[in-house]
Image (cartoon, rainbow, N blue to C red; front, side, top):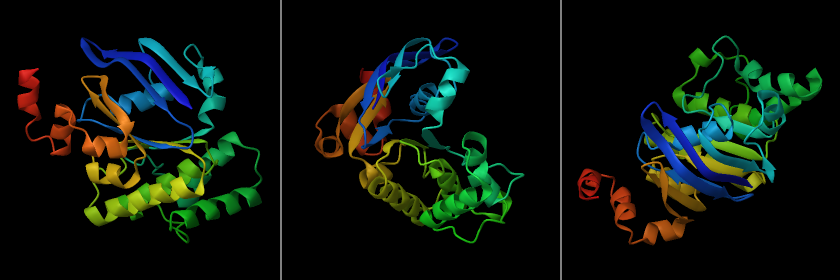
Length: 250
């Protein structure tokens, strides 16, 4: 379980997260929803300690990581996989080397074991036989799949998806959603999906969290989110076309 407690983060005079508290339950998929700029992706980076936070606590598997140094965070991060919004593949490495990178850096696996693990993960994301291709030869959807294979390479207990369907066509987006479901079914991982895509959320979410102005505005099952009569939740479900009037009102 990951617990984010009273987490705050400012960028200059702008408060992005404001005393944010969320529990990410073990073995469940939590989808964090919200408008662009509401702090969803920042929250993931704070959990990973890729950014410092101004106040609050992050507790992972009952370990308070709040004051952890970079060296103390490394063993924690090894148990986490991250699918970045832009895939973040290494341009100078082929597919095999991209997926093998974490295994070489953070395990003692030999080359035979690494080769078998890379093949296993590429097969899982339906990208077998692409090992020698370069990222520049891949479509956006293919890059997402390779990035997911890399995130899964070390069999992490936690997997983070940062806007996994952004910039993809509807068919490719659905393919990514199906892969997230596959991860859900075939692993015991705790999954956090950050997105503003309601179709994606509907497909993968077990729990829904809606952020607004850096705070939790809604937190419950996805079924409860779909039926909620909360005014802002209803506006968000409608596609946000009248959210500006809500903000003027409140």
